[in-house]
Length: 265
Image 1 (tube, helix red, strand yellow):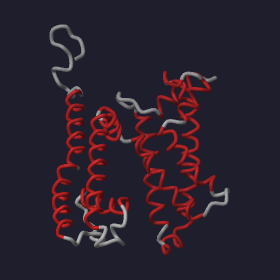
Image 2 (tube, helix red, strand yellow):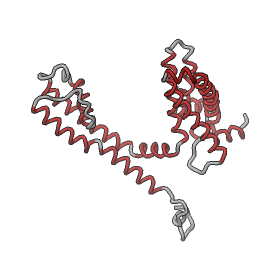
Image 3 (cartoon, helix red, strand yellow):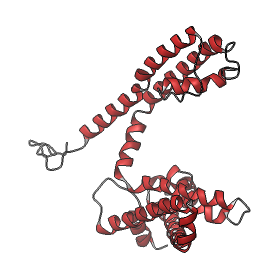
Image 4 (tube, helix red, strand yellow):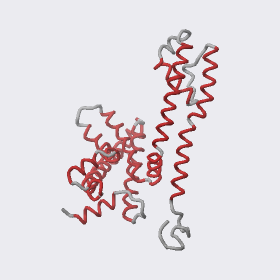
């Protein structure tokens, strides 16, 4: 039903790598503005003086956002069958509704309906901040980050695995060294992992620290290792961005098309 309208709706709402029309840019701009207003309203609404003074304004932003985001979500579900991945009317729409971005769209309107379920009103109001995640749909740079992470997911998983193993090892060693001297702070390996995370990331909150000479020596070594260890994922992502940007055609470049055969490079 209404295939032309459905196709136009999908084109209007769905992100694509090609150039955007004025209508698509305007739609993204309006939705992004609403997301920003919602984030600001949630933050300012927590200030009692501002809430008392501007409560009608915050309610207005909530209602307008609810109508727009609900309409957007329903339009996306209706038009998603235009995508080859979701062509089956029922199964395809269900698969689309279970995608991460579609779930974020659903969570953006869910807090309003949860208000009638008996949940704490304060919790429901704070859940509106989930709408800020919708910004992932409208900012092209975030799509680039997603593609880089997906491309480098194997390397990132290995790096995170190494960090996890290192955390387990250093926490176990520190537990063996400090548990007798500080049983309240290093009473178990899971308790010691809090110190391990703070030390490996070089955050150093100072609430848990070793007092024995061996513990201080180990902590110093781990702090130095942490500098290099957490640089590994950063290097992987930097490499991924560099590779991806090199593959993109340079705007206005003479090498976008082959000078001999005329084919796109």
